[in-house]
Amino acid sequence: MNLSKEIYRERRQRLMNNLGMDNTIAVLRSGEMATRNNDCEYEFRAHSSFFYLTGFQEPSALLFILPSGESHMAVLPKDPEREQWDGFRHGITGAMQTFGMEQAVELDELDELALELLDGADQVAVLMDDEYLRDQVLHWRDQLAAKARQGAIAPTGLVDLSDTLHEMRLIKDIGEIEIMERAAHISVQAHIAAMQAVQPGMMEYELEAELNYIFMKNGARVPAYNNIVASGSNACVLHYIKNDEKIEDGDLILIDAGGELGCYASDITRTFPANGKFSEPQAQLYQLVLDAYHEALTHMQVGKPYEDFHNAAVEVLTKGLVELGLLQGSVAELIENKAYRKFYMHNTGHWLGLDVHDCGRYKINGASRPFEAGMVVTLEPGLYVNPDNENVDAKWRGIGIRIEDDILIREDGPYVLTQGLAKEIHEIEALMASKALMASH
Ligand SMILES: [Mn+2]
View 1: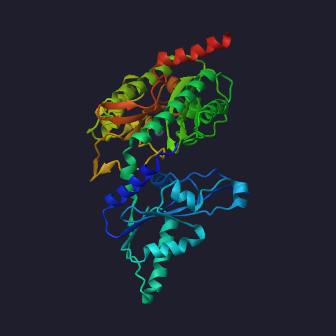
View 2: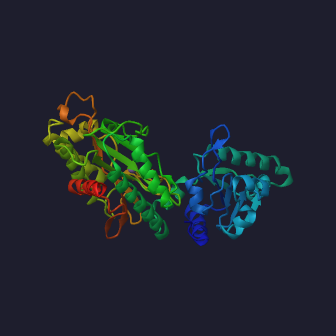
View 3: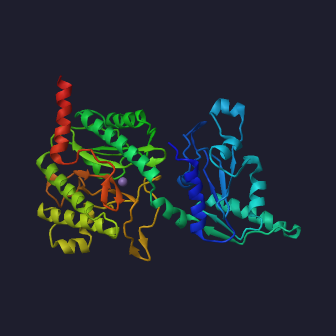
């Protein structure tokens, strides 16, 4: 699933060019194994930015990039005994041959390598939120400063690599888009399977199992984030991940889940009736969210400010809430004083990529940034009526709806990566009915 090593090499060179600082060395790390309990560890997943620049997925690795793009890595050593227990390591030969490092050393030579490379550099660039690495770099600086009389020259500046790197990650290249479209397609299949498997009386985690089965069977070995399978009013809890309640006849079910493929996330939400048929109030609110989706999508165009599609969704939703009687007053005022937030309290999208909430600025110089080709962003309007909301008719209470797709911004308009998954009411009911027909045969 990795891209060619030339692509990673080009990214490292471009990073240093874009950083545009003389005599500066960038340092990044892959991250450490994390304990789950006792001696059981979580499966390792490299830091997204480290992975973006290397394709390397082993823990404890450090990457040094020189101004020319020349790259050095410190990696876990080859160790037949450890590999017998924990699996294959690339070692220094693999780091150079397979991953295109100009030089690689084993981890016990890390300090030596760092001191050699940082001696005489003006600045060191790190992802400033990596506190551990910041401390490590300052420690190397101190060691160099202590050797000043032997001629060592310690770097004098620590600079933040985040903005430069995040702007690169924000615009996806063809290879990334291909992987993201495959991840999206797998997740579409998973949602179809869940819609066709649901029966009132099932537990939420039984539906979650359908998702995980399709993800894993198709190579998306892990979900990109914790699966949300929320029946009934659980859908009003935005990050509901307990997934351990019984699905009742008459419930809507909100599933927010996407597989991760080659470290790239997909992120889909669908909301559908447990018994295959929307009730009248469910259908009314659902259609409103769907109308907001369709309107917002038309604003996801190259050159349009990022905030436009959210504002478009808010306007459709607020208007509809007034028409259905959940809000009273003038639409403009309800938007102005954010009264709609009682029913719609999140944004209509976020960047998507190696991280589900991917990096990249939303504003530039205080203003919403324009869309550019190659950005991937989610579109996810929703409505959530708190079950305890006494200010609305009882028929609305406890209904939670979200519809979410992954959108690639292209020169010729928005392209839905997660296409092919029912979202119109008649499409969802037909898909669920087709399952019932199959089961009865
Ligand atoms: Mn999302």
